[in-house]
Image (cartoon, rainbow, N blue to C red; front, side, top):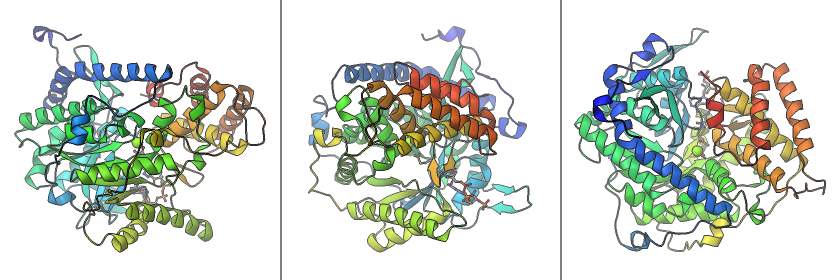
Length: 530
Ligand SMILES: CC(=O)SCCNC(=O)CCNC(=O)[C@H](O)C(C)(C)COP(=O)(O)OP(=O)(O)OC[C@H]1O[C@@H](n2cnc3c(N)ncnc32)[C@H](O)[C@@H]1OP(=O)(O)O
Ligand SMILES: O=CC(=O)O
Ligand SMILES: [Mg+2]
């Protein structure tokens, strides 16, 4: 409930970040965040409630569809605003958490863009968030340097990647900052602090500020971001539309509203991105009650399967018809040290993924590691000699509702089940320990990929009648045994999260045994940090 203005209190920050980091949470910056909260929190809550209602209808048997009330947006002729020069060539974008050394490495990686991530790859401890904001501020002012414990010195070189920041999604609270007795939204905290400190400097240099917007489910959620940015532009004295956004299409409901999301943000949107991992998670979550739409184990759900191919092609067609960029996504493979053959095979998988993307018409792609920049760049340089390929309209693409909703064929193996248990556990434990992205069996695992593992386990166990490829039933006893074994092994190891193994196992057990699939792993996990 809105608090009357005469009772407004000053925002409070709890917790004990380092003084250097806390120097960014100034009274003025927090007042800026508080103003965002007071203006936009009611609408954020309304939109989260709309998500719950839509999900209830899917649980009752309905299926997502293109909206009747927005047909005119899909059918009429309009384009997004002109793209700023700094973002006209986005062939390779590197992503990573907002950790100091990694930011420097990412900016120096040779990628055109660096997406600094407060979402899938960052655990939102107060220290991570404020250190991250500090690091980004230093990057913007050109003072970002780092000396490692081994004495290696890092500084940003000439021609760094263009900085794009991904704040948290609409669903996450920021419990360390309260306004009128309520926690602010994580999204508004991340966006607000970054914009407050950096927007004017970046704008003065024609470098932004630029944002990636995660996990949207409807055009109204995009419209809320547009209103937030408009307010911030006015408050900071920037021209309207100067804050630019690229939107991840990484939920199943959003795939039915690509035109609408572009339209809602048309003053400032630069493109859409195929956030494949959250998209698969969202497919599982949205259709969790639909026994006929269960997916095979996650290793078999590749971008080449029909429902994912349809989603990526629809994204390319939609973006290019509106003058926007159609960004590809993240291959999960990362370099493998000490095994040349395995490393070559991993790089070849990345190369094949990028080749598929550039040939389909994507204007650029994501990589998770600096060593993958040259791999992706070589493919895009060869097949996309111009800065982008927005002129490839993909008129041939016609995607139906059923194509987006039809699951791919495949199986569930015991190894796939066990891998889901291991990844969900190890990732959750690392996340609780403050590490939001970790390598597991030579794959990048972050909040999105771990959610797939967790959601699959829930779905396979709760349908109750599913079997492994060898016909053995999938049951809770097996899950409990696998979880206990992995928790023991992790606890005995020196892997990330080892000290949080039991806590992570208890959380996963509760989430997996619960009658309802929890919306996000990171929500109950957030109660266990700081
Ligand atoms: C689904 C999605 O949302 S995808 C987007 C979110 N996910 C990400 O952004 C993934 C980012 N990637 C990472 O976090 C890491 O690459 C990991 C965790 C997967 C692997 O990390 P590591 O095992 O530490 O990698 P590795 O040891 O090979 O690193 C070698 C060097 O590259 C650096 N590096 C690795 N990944 C990155 C990155 N994404 N950005 C910048 N530098 C990086 C390391 O800091 C290290 O630097 P150093 O040699 O100066 O010490
Ligand atoms: O954010 C990206 C994804 O794949 O999820
Ligand atoms: Mg994601």
